[in-house]
Length: 202
Image 1 (cartoon, rainbow, N blue to C red):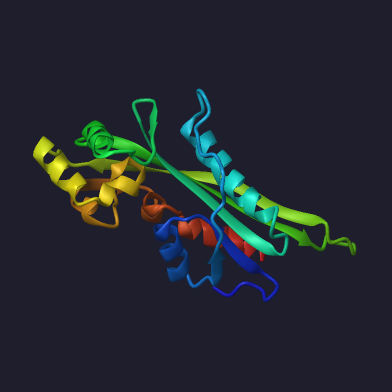
Image 2 (cartoon, rainbow, N blue to C red; image 1 turned 60 degrees about the vertical axis):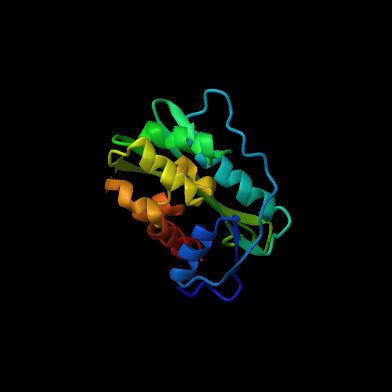
């Protein structure tokens, strides 16, 4: 997809999975990693959390780059009333995998698109802006995993920088029984939905 010439696109994320998805979609962009606090708020729902953090990341970059169209994103795995982010240790990764193995969990993905400094319709001002914040949920059912399988998977190091401690696009795919919803949302970015919004705001 070719955005208009005046659109300089920035991905406000350090995730290599999101970078790869956006590249595969044909978008030319640069990466600027926002320095924001991603700590969940007390009693915050997974939907509210991913939308807030996606907007926070995009907003932090857009504040310093008013010339750009900025994309922010956030992903969490949700089960038993708990949001599972990235594990902080091997032990935590094993604990997370133990929670989701043999069961169905939700993957919530939030996306924010912010573009500032654009002309307002019907006028000459350049102080206008376009922003969209939304989310998607995908249901993922995992296969049964023995404690040995969990330890062997964690030993590959793949789970250690993934929400919920697994990568559906990697070794972890063998432990996924089925999904209901967007596959790319589980990877880290609902690319079909994002491209639809980019076409609207271009």
